[in-house]
Length: 252
Image (cartoon, rainbow, N blue to C red):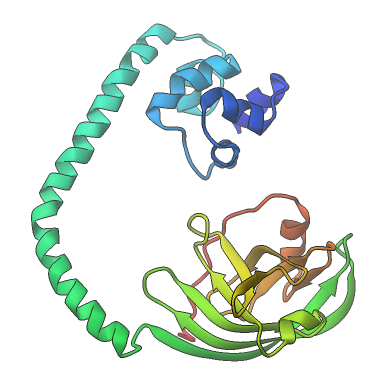
């Protein structure tokens, strides 16, 4: 990606570039992975920080022939204004009809929520492979999953996620919570708890898991990887978190 290449040419880390732009290093990482694009208002300072043209950022590549950069920069305030106007117009068009639908929706949601219509019971015994820090398979284990999935709103799971080879996760008073859109869409995490306290239990928070819960990969604090499929291993050893959108399963 152009932004990543230009940043490395300037010998900048993602964090250093983020500080110059007053954004998070996570935002810079998303731009470089193509998972997002800078706001229009950031194009000019980003181009200046990387010695690029605004047109280069818009095209996603440097062009051999230089085009008038001043014109592109003059267009940025107009683009920002047009974007805001379009946003305001959409909201005003949607607001009237949405309010009435929301009122009816809240009533219906409350009825269905109390009836448990948005909760699904899950009970699985899933075999998984144990990998060492180098990504080599060194054994096998079983993960017992027994709990409830919330399928509407913030999709999440609460119940047992007991990894046989990680004894603290198997205790009766230990509960796991999994969220499928924890930090941003497609970013899963897992948190263990007992009454009155949250626990690490030697399992890192980062997790990859499909919505069927039959395929997943997680990493222990000592670097050991627990995964149902080998393709999770390079993701978990890379040091980065790659957002994925799990495929919806007909199981639910």
